[in-house]
Image (cartoon, rainbow, N blue to C red; front, side, top):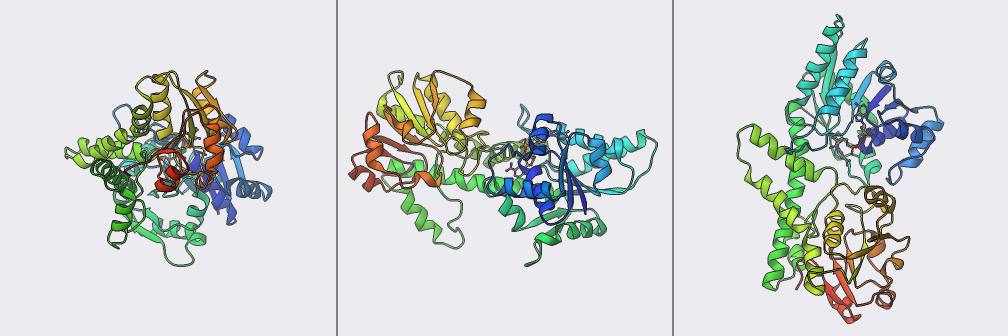
Length: 440
Ligand SMILES: NC(=O)c1ccc[n+]([C@@H]2O[C@H](COP(=O)([O-])OP(=O)(O)OC[C@H]3O[C@@H](n4cnc5c(N)ncnc54)[C@H](O)[C@@H]3O)[C@@H](O)[C@H]2O)c1
């Protein structure tokens, strides 16, 4: 099949590379000429396990190409994916500028029947808006060309994106009529062999399903973090509570880890966007606002714990930070808890020495050269002369460190663990003052 993906970020690039991997011919289009140049040279600009290999395989087999020319993109594919960003606007709503620009461009160049597939996370009603935008462009050109717009939200997780795309737990198709849904079934057949994962519904329900999934997960995290705060104040251990409630099959163990808050390019913006949509619909949705508020508070918890130990003025101190990405196995720092921590520590005058297995370069890109940030190439190097170690991201590498080496390098034996990685008794027995989330 011939497929075009408009927008070659995390979602678009994974979609394009995975579709090429099963034999399709894919052209990925992006407005970012530098990114296209890098990709055309076989360089994958993001850290995503398994992605470089399939990008390079697709390119070597001439099944995967990159370009900036949208007219060439529309000419190539019979399936046209829109996978551009939908960043939050100032009022919290999803900014549809890029989605509608892509729709407009498709309408300018469409010359035969195509299926246009909305893969970006978009508010309910956007499939309809995209349809209108394309129809208006066709009308402006004085041509009448049939097309379908299908909603196909993406559920991949950064850090496991290739695996998730190749073996999805569900493929949601929001289509207005069965013929369009059948075309999507054919497209996804290679990923749908073991059992039927396709769930076909109307476009508004498909659009809402994506937000519903993300706010459900964000809610679990915020509720656990709220309970962790309570546990801390009541002398209970949230890790024991977690096991106690996870054993109930109605609750389950997944996604109930307390921590220093959720981040990333999806949960924060999607919770806010749905909250905005609720307001637009004149419907009070207090739970959504609370989920966000709890998360914002939680992102400051590590700073509070450092201050409780070292005092309000941190200018005499250096803090070692392990983990910058918003979660392991990615270099993505969008809305990462580490950023709130860094900025909080800097505001109090602290020096920071940080280590992350993948996101060092991204931190340099965001913050540039500054005297109060040293990005280290080794986790133990980050500890040299620091007054505390703070852990923000649960990378595997941090799970079983050499505590003797840590103690030898830190100026004082203090660990503030934002991901509850260690056994408090063992860490204290190793001579540390240890603070975790929701543990006495
Ligand atoms: N990142 C995730 O884990 C994830 C998961 C599921 C869904 N989503 C959703 O998928 C969408 C894309 O997210 P992302 O993380 O891949 O974003 P991203 O910022 O990594 O990539 C978006 C890309 O679109 C390009 N672009 C913008 N306007 C364009 C245009 N008019 N034509 C061509 N290219 C254009 C940008 O240059 C950029 O490369 C968002 O709606 C997001 O909410 C993301």
